Length: 479
Image (cartoon, rainbow, N blue to C red; front, side, top):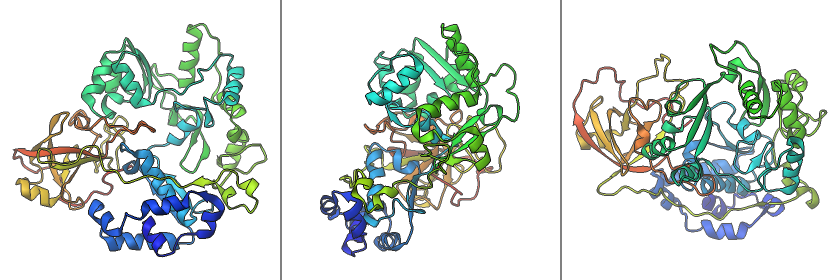
């Protein structure tokens, strides 16, 4: 798309000059990527790609949204910056109704980042390696903070395998079933000296734990805040009490601290939020009172009179170079296919994702009756089904270099030949992650859930009773 936009003179030359760096090197880099090349790689007709490029470049306002189909690859960051390059090329950034927006798969994923649930960040996206940022938190907390970046999830798994990480505290996560290469993940979890799981259900990970702490479902059983994909922080209010011995998560943390010799008292959710915003300039203006009165605010919101920020990077359009600040660089990234390519032994590409009504490993959705639930299946194109001599409902054996399993067939006209699809929603029935590859992006730590090589072999014929008609799903593949 970028090459077509440049060749047709559709780039925003004024914005490129004003707000970016590195355009000439980028222009040279995209030159080999013709429409015909893109068609060979993607299967999308060149004319369709051309039309998409022209529509995007000519639009007054345009936004690029993506889900895990972009990021669950061994080159996830490269994929994301390639999209950012398109926005910079066309000037679709720093203006209302424009920009790049990663759509989150669940509520409050953005909020986790806001709170510092990243190996290199403190709350408010402040760098742990920055002395000024770190000192502020050390003073508030009365403790030294290690001045180096931590491990991401993939690095933690590697460290467990090497016995460099021997104890783990898991909150609201089910890595025993959600992480790639399940055989390896379960092996390293079982090898821990101590595993604590704080959960609302007894997940497979919780079953491996030495200690399980029953927690509240904070979306209904606790107070707090959530952040959505547009950076809008909103209040979350308690509606019901947690069942049985389940406890509020702030209470659990405070009690753990007390029993380890540190008296935190029992702060409310608002107390915790006030501490966070006092230490995070971009959240400082978001009092509970303002969040409730205004129905939420978008960060950055630096003071209690600030209306919040509707969109980011407007500075890049400023006439004053000093106010523009650091310009946005074009990133020089090349196309790179999946780590595992189809071959004679494993001729198909398996991609995994989600269906409309389900979450991840089904912890929060698998126990509910739904007319959309149909259990796990191997979704396959009509062409591949005919070649293999299989029909809707037949049981097939799916094998990768890491494992093998059986699943019923679902023929989906929306799939192209050579690609098969599965989800992670029903791991107790079909453990899809026994197949997936533990190839990860070195910068984001994201595993390549979206592509691995498999072969499919007929196992046995069964009645297709219970299977839906062979038609595309409402939402096959992503969040």
